[in-house]
Image (tube, rainbow, N blue to C red; front, side):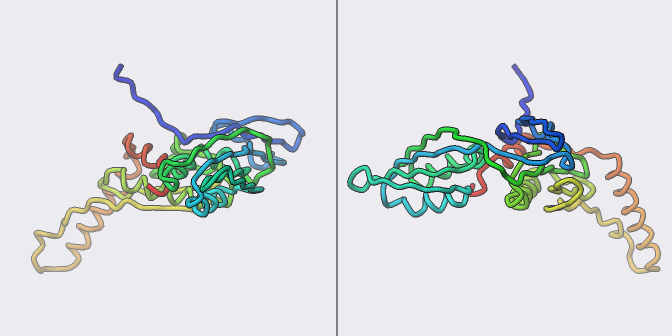
Length: 240
């Protein structure tokens, strides 16, 4: 139907208790409440059940702990087969856990989960800015300990996908007014002094200053078009 599909970062339903006692549920980063009004943030936890060959046990346990998994339980169900149970945040699972689980078990592992409860967590809103403009589709609610890593990943992926312009493009990850990650796409540069052979250095300086002023004006009025591939790149696993 020739539709333009908008992709966004996957999210879960978070629960926030405000200082006035009101409880709200947020499943969209654009509805994230004012941080000054938040008394407590909670995220849903799951109990994950995994069946896998014993030879992959070490790598799967490492993956689960990387995803903030706790309270592990292990049972041998037969020769060379293990059932592994972990409690972990649902947000960590929907991002890239299943793909990585299938990768480290070479397709021999099976995975299932049940949502068990909400648990208190240090949650923050991570915004992605392109040329100082916030990209709502790339905003995400994350645990504070993961915010910098997620921000750097998004900035680096966008840097590889967004086409270069005639001016520098700053890609930033921010929590509120604090910049925690940044990448810069360098500008195309024309050699405006190519026809200056010898002579007074001041002429070259004037040409370079004129070019610099022109790029500054372009940056102020220019808009950056983000291709669909850039959104897909941000959604990919950090191991791809």
